[in-house]
Image 1 (tube, chains in turn purple, blue):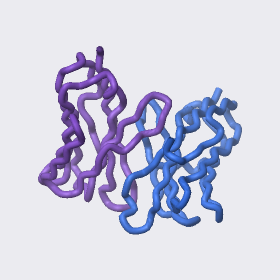
Image 2: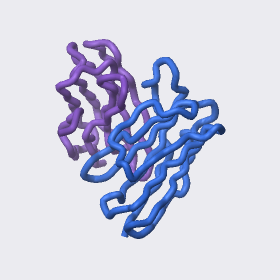
Image 3: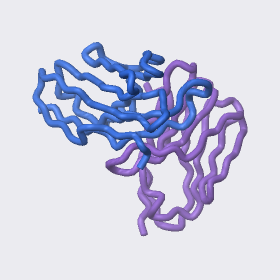
Amino acid sequence: TQLLEQSPQFLSIQEGENLTVYCNSSSVFSSLQWYRQEPGEGPVLLVTVVTGGEVKKLKRLTFQFGDARKDSSLHITAAQPGDTGLYLCAGPPDGNQFYFGTGTSLTVIP
Amino acid sequence: DSGVTQTPKHLITATGQRVTLRCSPRSGDLSVYWYQQSLDQGLQFLIQYYNGEERAKGNILERFSAQQFPDLHSELNLSSLELGDSALYFCASNPGGAGIYNEQFFGPGTRLTVL
């Protein structure tokens, strides 16, 4: 069992559609990060959320941290082919180890 | 370009062998992290070093070891290799210290294939 479960695992949508990716855990996290990884490259940080209930917007991407700090979501509005990639949530539940989520592979079809 | 370099980019070896993966962190970063990424296990944290000292340990096998040198580069040693060790190995770095879970900057990875 993974500490951070993401859903869906795979997502294939048409350009212009909206989508939401979820990251859930039974543990409380002091902070959560979202990364995007493109094929053949390492993950790149998109955002860090720290406060329960926090909402952060990055252009067409909206990130939310759950009130109890056990879950997070990523919403993409009007998806574009450039959004294609593997989306990973990550965080330290106990300050000693960093966990990455199971990942959501997004494909945006032109 | 994150500023983190990893060598080699690809490595093909046989079961039972030993390999060393190398990572140079971004200039000024004191903290280095090692991760293993495979299709069935996702991205797994292996170990973290800060300024030459081990800071945190994850799911690192006893056959694996790492160290960080005085010039802050790090090496991950994998021995008695098994087929299941085939994976992408990433190194990441950040300044470390207070707020140690700030953004991590990832290198391009080393793809290890064990035949």
